[in-house]
Image (cartoon, rainbow, N blue to C red):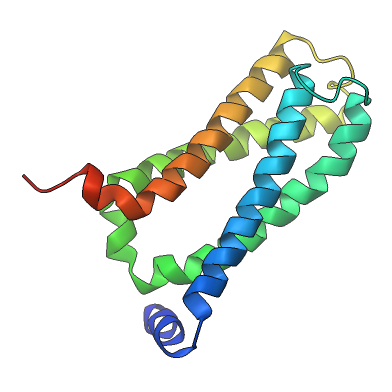
Length: 154
């Protein structure tokens, strides 16, 4: 897989920027849906809409964004795994991503059970964790490329 990824990224004209653009569009789709859901559960946005209605509309966008991001980011990881696995910022991204996915999964389970209709403090706390984790995932993902500047060899 490593050789195939390297060959594709180096020989297909324009593939790296296209994949990065798709990855960023997936990030925009994911962040828009996750942030709006979390802000609605925290009663900070969309108060004029029913919680269940908004979640029903936004969860599919979030769930479709995840495979788009995975498939568009995987060739870069496979082509140069040492660049990512030796990068401490990538470890932060992976940790925040796991936390964000867990929080979102728990919110989805709560939504399926109807527990998000009138969000109580556990749901609001989970929405706050989800919001923070998604924001940190996105921020650390963008900082991966700049880790050389952050951790300059001394």
